[in-house]
Length: 91
Image (cartoon, rainbow, N blue to C red; front, top):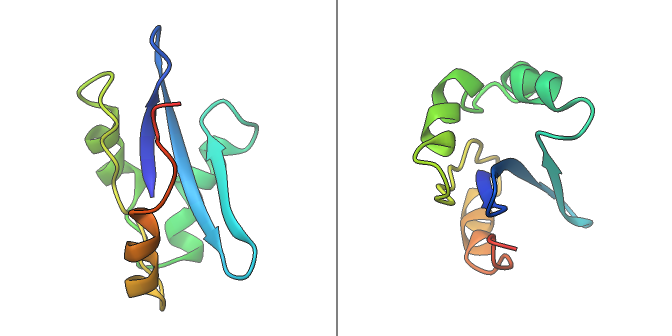
């Protein structure tokens, strides 16, 4: 899932990655390697939504969380249920 955090002065685009048996990892656009990860994700996960498709859905409008599910693997039902229990995305 990709979404935006409202940091009040600017937005921060983030990605949540569920790691089976290890929880959820959050990465964001300020981290080293973000551009490569966002661009190359469909190469490693062929059914993942390309950045060219999800970026504008997440980036606009400004200051709105705008979550977008960019990949549903084998555990799609479990992942959808997990999304409803993730912590508040505004902090």
